[in-house]
Length: 287
Image (cartoon, rainbow, N blue to C red; front, side):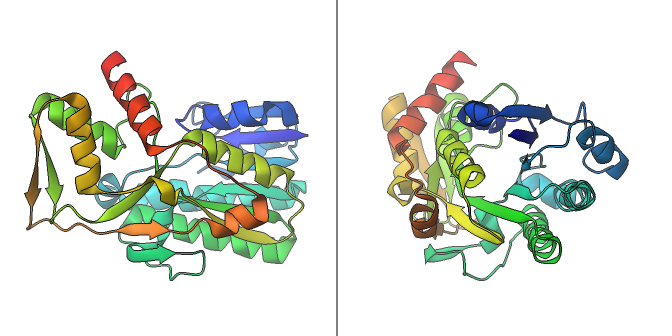
């Protein structure tokens, strides 16, 4: 089997490549070798050695920066996905895995599943929601078997230069400011999942015989914490600092159920929130 991984230099990709290396040949591209916003670049790369499956990880990330550069996010995350799928259609590539985001749902105080409304709060989430719609349409129109994965916060050891991580930012605030400031009252909830567990979900998708297009929330409700609980754990671990709140700032929950992924993929996330925090702490100290 030939597995083509886009965004191969990214945070998640190294875990995906490790998890899937025994399944066949791993082809790797990133912006330095294939520009997904340029369909000719996509065609010239993929037709050299046509893969059996594409694992699409390449994307722009970050809710704040997406508000500053919305057009860039739609060009890369949405148009880039369209270009890849159109070349899949032309070359006969029949399996496709899209890394999406739970942020397509916006916010929710109760655990949501894959059928919850699509209501993104920022251009990043919207660009992923649009990419998902394209995947569905190409699966329905051209017989591509597709998997869409929606993780919540992904947390693990942070590589150099990667700053889109809430736990890392909280630790940095403790180190540089001596406190963590939370929006609202700090009691809104989120969930964390380790990249090893996401990579295993992708492996299971590649091995699955599921036809058509399926969406899976890949979260870990056992790693669900309020921001206040998370911040206090970090203060206790650092043995310094304190937590403050900013009632004027908006905070919201986004929590979920992973039942479908467990039932249909037999996916079982393993890494706990304590292990995730430990990895990020170690990464911050060694960075």
